[in-house]
Length: 198
Image (cartoon, rainbow, N blue to C red):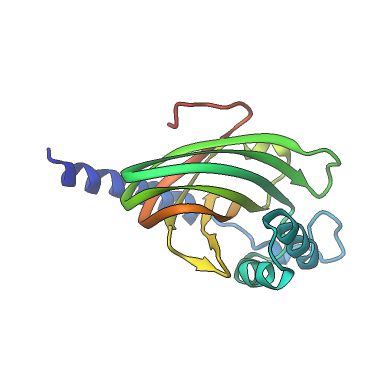
């Protein structure tokens, strides 16, 4: 089996995994009662994201506009950093703090995962992830498939989606490095650093 066949087989595997995970019904966060105090408002997310990335609130508002229009108000977010690299097969490692609207203290979370596709390069990024339908902090420690177009940016911030059942993640990234292409893969979120990405 040559390298191209391996890439095709790997890409097909990740696309099937992503499709299965994405097909689970996820009620948009916008269906929540707006009087509920368990979600972040658009203004809160824009301000927290702008402060974290060091960008203007206008730039952050453009980046989150599409996400909020599609899924509504998140009930949690992760602020952290990561490094990644790829040449057809890629790896990504990161760490950050998970904040839930109803919890006063942040919870440490790590993530790691492989990808495969027409993708090459490396980058170091700040990551601000909107989290939807998270019932409690323990529920984040799962595997989240996704498909990413690494060159997709709004106001200099890259956006993609991941889903496991009803829980939806929308990581937004900005950073240094060169990475181009499209890949399919997953990220596994854990309580401790795990150097084995699978």
